[in-house]
Length: 103
Image 1 (cartoon, rainbow, N blue to C red):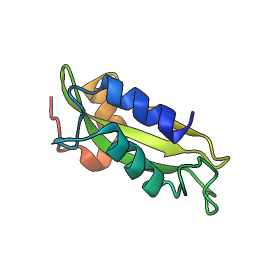
Image 2: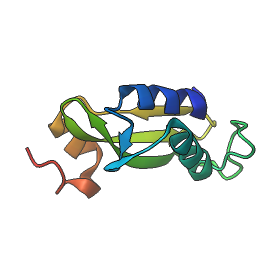
Image 3: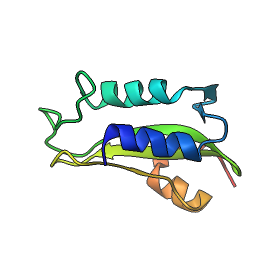
Image 4: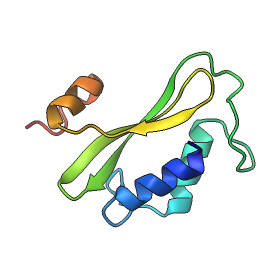
């Protein structure tokens, strides 16, 4: 998956384009992801220092509330994203944010 594919998918999944409790445009999401993962001039490429998994954790507004999700880059340069299916899974995946979304 490319950064552009990921941002398009996430934007379609979101309720009204809300991320991190703010209204975003798809372009803002794409640019944020490209900046985070070291993309240049809109060309998806392997980040030169990608020796391990790199991830960005954000919140997305879904029909059943705010959820944490992760966009990641593997050591071989591939991109992907994960959204947990349950609140328990969310707490397991993102223990650093365990105070959020207590359910």
